[in-house]
Image (cartoon, rainbow, N blue to C red):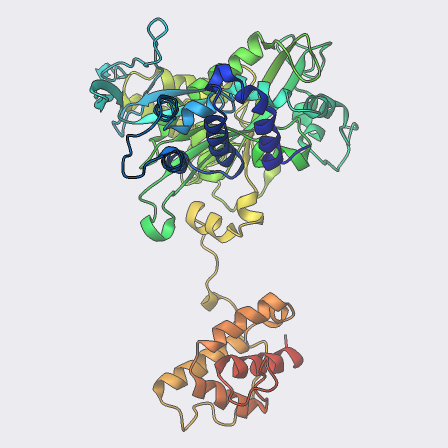
Length: 563
């Protein structure tokens, strides 16, 4: 198993024999070495295309200077040198195409109407590489056609070409699966995933992987048999993730700008491999600057669902894989979507957590049950048939009012995922625990998303954890600002902070907080507590705020706490 860097490195240099073929790039070794260096920097070091173009232009200029026999006469070049320079490439993309390292992709044009977002696949006339798109959007919504312009003219070398105003790049899922099966050892690992379940006993309490769960143990293929049962076919399952983020970072633009990612993970890979970036599939980037409306997200999922339907209904035959040199039929299934709470609801067609029908698993409502009802034995679970019936009613609605009525009654809208005959929206939607467990967003989920307000500090028993005896709590020699710093320090120190001071990170955190207070307040507190400032450097003579803060925290950490 190679890392992404190693894999691309080996792939690049394995193509070197073909790259140096005179038929591809000409017999001149100077040209071959120059362009090969640019491609190697692009693939191995991640140099951008703009950087690659700059490198090509600099290399061309250096080579031209080397060829010049008379610096005062730049035109004094031999015919061979002029031919070499005239054929020097300017765009690294034309060179990278010789390696076939870029995955196949299709550029869709997206309707720029913020309420529409319809996507259109290009068509090609004869062998022309120029894509053809419709000029206007033909999306119909309740008998009203959008008619928004989709293209804008662009002048390229004197030729006017119509280009998409808002492009959406979809990467070919079949091509990616083929590349995954071509990697050494991966096909065997993916096939053996069905045989490595750690809990064959359905009553087992411990599950190590998704293959230990009930859903995959009972998941049947299109032939009615368990999905793993096949003589020669490859049977693989995937999870889908849709997530939106601000490309300009929250500090610069808040939530005003947003783009989305559609990615897949092959669950047949071992857990230690499946989430590495080089083993994940990026289906596409949903263009910004704003998130599409809830109903419009389906347009970006359509090409992916089309591919999964082909993999499910007929399978895709690859002429050669790493383990099957004579070719192999492969079937794939999308068995779950793993997103954060808002994205999971948008993708699967469920209402937001603020809706009356807030739950994607059961039929509880905020009006009748609320968030506080934990009597799970009385909950009635949603069913696949029920969810599909409501979603079909939503799609068949003939007016916005009828559609809104169906949505309010069920908390469901149509999702492209329901085109998959095996997809169960009541069981296949998983809320990503990473946002809570690893990013610490439990409070944000409760307060910002679920709307559950936690108890405020004033509602909690404010009795002190630590009693700090001060002879003069006001500090006669302190001004008003310094007294406020002293009061803030006492509030912090009398709170439950002993468990934090036991760790190095906790000590650093509280040292920084206390160091922001006034120096005189910290000096006064040290005098009252009879503790000395502690400097990192024992040779230090003049103490500053971090030294006094460190001495105070050491005193707090060594005294007993009263509960």
